[in-house]
Length: 172
Image (cartoon, rainbow, N blue to C red; front, side, top):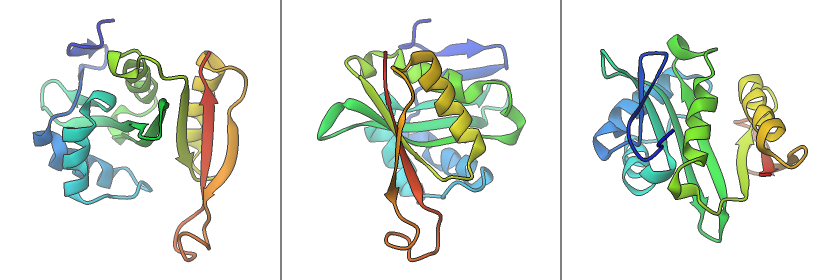
């Protein structure tokens, strides 16, 4: 698959890199995907502008409505690591493997040449995210991923949010 051009998959979705004009619609998609934290629209605009090469959008071809989005970036102090910030899949597109397709498309792109590790944070109760990243570790990793608490519920969130567990996968 040529990941540097727009791609259509069986779900009647167009996969492409986001542009700054997608930021608002992506913000609304994330708001529909509870329990994801909704960032400011400005944050999503910047993701679409500054990190577009390592993000991927899936939109309904007929409506032009975003149904999936992954935001990611190469870590500034460790560019061999891709940090996956958020995975948002609209309920209409869940259970079809869209998140994995988006993630694989990002990893296969030129923007990820030289990436040897993936990191993400996941709350303990987010079964869908664990399933996604554990399948990635099984299929493309060197053994199981490594887990540890990155942001603690009390120390970092003052008890207002669940702990975020860092999951690090060495790619094979």
